[in-house]
Amino acid sequence: MGESEYLNESVLELIGLRKRFGDHQALEGLDLKVPAGSCYALLGPNGAGKTTTLNILLGFIEADAGTARVDGVDVQANPAKARTRIAYIPEQVQLYPRLSGFENLEYFHGLGSSEAEPAARLRDCLNQAGLAEGDCDRRVAGYSKGMRQKVGIAIALARRAPVMLLDEPTSGLDPQAAWELNNSLRSLAKQGVTMLMATHDLFRAREVASRIGILVNGCLQQEIDPAEVAGPELEARYLQEVQQALGVQA
Ligand SMILES: Nc1ncnc2c1ncn2[C@@H]1O[C@H](COP(=O)(O)OP(=O)(O)OP(=O)(O)O)[C@@H](O)[C@H]1O
Ligand SMILES: [Mg+2]
Image (cartoon, rainbow, N blue to C red; front, side, top):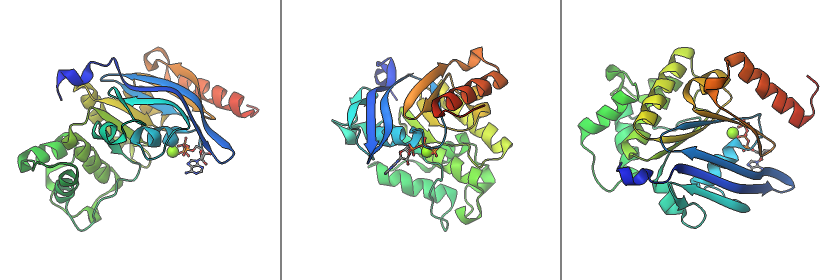
């Protein structure tokens, strides 16, 4: 990744994003910016519009109105170019069970790249993602969810994409695996990777993100600097926003 990739102060930029499914307004004019080399955590209840936001950035679905820019590239105008800037970690990383972690990485990396990558570099990506040396050549069929997640991170690392989108990356991970994932994300941020993560994990979001947004009914209700709130306060503010927006009595 060259310095030139980070000339845009906000590497991810959403302006007035709107999306309707049938009679349901999933996004109601979402504005959001993520500066280079930082991690933004999008919190919000089920159905708030988090995955919809990621899907628009990925070009999987089109917004009805508004602009989404990735590394300066307008997603709607130039989806293929925008896609080259993004690595995506879905909640369930899909791998071939009969191949090893290393072989999966080799295969998926080969799909998206015209140049063969030296095996040593791919192994280094698995290493950086935190997969134990002894596990890299075992069949994925015997992997835990956390181990599959690490192969997903390694695939993302090998792509050298300046942006990473993650959908509920810690869901179903044990505390140790979630902690390791957070360490990988922090090290990626240090390398200049810009991340947007949808999550329900307030605790981990506070640890890794430099900004937290609370999304309810497709609207960003509040942005929080995690350095300024303790865990219990973050939870209280989250619950207050959600209950207020959904009209639930506390
Ligand atoms: N392809 C689709 N067709 C119809 N409705 C959809 C579609 N995708 C999302 N929706 C609706 O849009 C709203 C937002 O969904 P979205 O998946 O973005 O929520 P989310 O914040 O990711 O929720 P969760 O925390 O459960 O993953 C929901 O009401 C959902 O039912
Ligand atoms: Mg979702």
